[in-house]
Amino acid sequence: MKIALVFIVLITMFQGCGSEKRVVVAKKQELPSWYTTASRSNAEELYSVGEGQNKEDAVSNALSMMISTLSVSISSQFNSKSVIKEGQTSSNTATYVNEVQSDVAKIRISNYQLLESQSIGFKRHIVLVKSNKKKLFESMKQEIEQKLRKVESKKSVIANHNAIKKIDAYQGFRESLADVPNTLLVMDVLDSSFNGDKYLTRLEAIDKEYALLVSSLSFSVSSNAEASNLKSAISQGISAQKLKISDAKGKNHFRVHIKSKIEKASSYGFTLARSAIAIEVKDYKGVVIGSNKLSVIGQSTQGYNVAKENVAFKLNEMIKKEGILKVVGLKM
Image 1 (cartoon, rainbow, N blue to C red):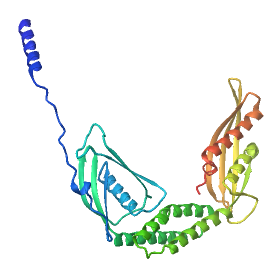
Image 2: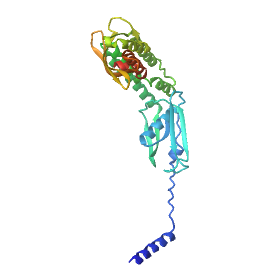
Image 3: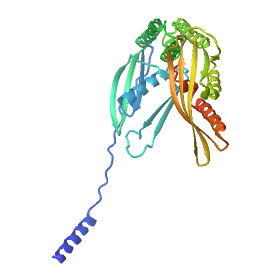
Image 4: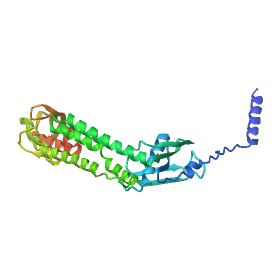
C-alpha cells in the first residue's frame, strides 16, 4: 500500500514538472477618446475631465480643474493624481503619475452636466463634465445672494442676544461667506461686465460689525480665597486674546469667577495640592453663559505653598495650549 502511494506521488510530481506555466497578462484597456482628447472650452461652454477613486471624487476634481482653466489666481492648491499606464490601467504599480497643481479654491459649482463617466478599474474613475458659462455665472450669483439673505435673517434673530452669542453667530457668518471673494473672481472672468463691489461692501460691513462687537467686550475676574493665585493666569489669557480686562458695567461686560477647593497630600517625598477648580462666566444679568471644571494637581518638594503655586503654573500652561476660551468654557 505504501509503495503504491509513493508511486502515485512521483507520477504527480513528474506531471507537474512537465506542464507549462501559464502567464496571466493584463488585458490592455484603451482609454476613451473623450478623456484623452477632451472637448475644448469655448465662448459659451466649459469642459473638463477628472479622475478619482470614485465618480464623486472624479467629478469634484473635474470641476476644480474647470475653474483652474479660467486662469483665476486664488490661494489654495488643487492636486489631481492619475494612475494611468499609456492606454492601460495597472493594479500593481503606478508607472505614470500625472500631478496637476493649480491655484484653485473650494468654490461650489452646482450647475454642470456629467457627459461621460467610466470606471477604469482598481478603484479609479474618469469623467467628462460640461458647464454653460452663463448658467454657471447665474448659479454662483444666486448662491451668494442666498447666503447673504440667510445672514441678514439670522442677524435679526440674534438682535437681543448677549455680545458673546452674537460674536459666535458672526463667526459662523464669516465662515459661510469665506469663499465669496474667490467666487466673485470667477464670476468676473465668466462675465467681464460684472461688478462685484456691492457684495464685497456687504462682506466688509459684516467684518466691521464683528470687530466692533469684539472691541466692545470687557471682562473682570474674581475668585474665592483658595483660587486667588489663579486670577492672574485667567486675566493674562483674556488679555492675550486682545480682550479688555476692566471693572466696567453694561450689556457687554462679563464676569469670570473662579472657585477652587484644595486638598493637601503627599506622595513619594512630594507635597501635593489637589485642586478642584470651577470656572463660571456670567453676563450682566448674572446668567451663566460659560463654565468649566478642572482638576489640577500641583506638586513640590519645597512645601505646600510652592505646590499651590505649581497649580497656577499648570493652569497657565493649559491656557497657552488649549486657549482661554476653552478653559473658561466660552464659545466665541
